[in-house]
Length: 245
Image (cartoon, rainbow, N blue to C red; front, side):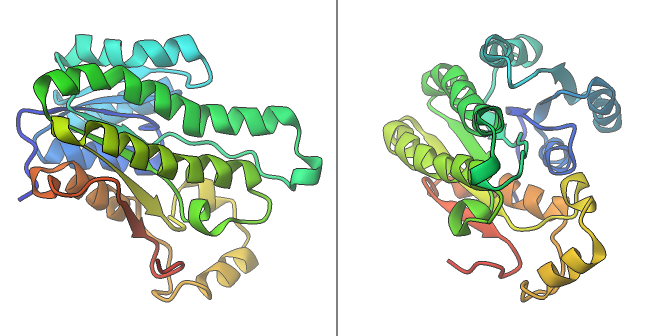
């Protein structure tokens, strides 16, 4: 089940907890994985852990030229890209009234524009092969909103519209486009929360705990598998019941 033998994947944000878990899961399924991120040491450690099935590629998603080159570098390393997981994301939280334009632009550039550029970069090869999988890692706040995260919520909501539109464009070429929308996950991004903040947050989650990176990775692995060939333009919510769609 969910075997990925013979396919190659590119995972962004792989130097973080969720991205690393996704890369490990895809490799465990038989895929070769280009792991990309900004922290070279973390990527090297991840690639060493995975073994010969992983290739680290450092890329700054704020640099559009580097973003455009990333799919080409991944193809050079692996031979082709059948799976793209747009997982990378940053936050620059603050109330809109005080939000500098730079914080808006940086979050939209990394979380939305880079995902668009990378998707465009892999499409030609997928269309030629008449098979491909694109997954965007969105967020529960892209559906519910969140005070202090206008920029982040807007970018994640934008991924939903982009995925649905792209799914319609490429469905007849054997390519599916979907999203995974995590709730609050136990990663570096949430480790800075104070205890009272965590308690207040957990009280809103019916399951009563944060999610784990492996649980997000499992959802991604399903969506990129052959078993999910009839699923496209959909959002798989993995949030412990925090927001029920």
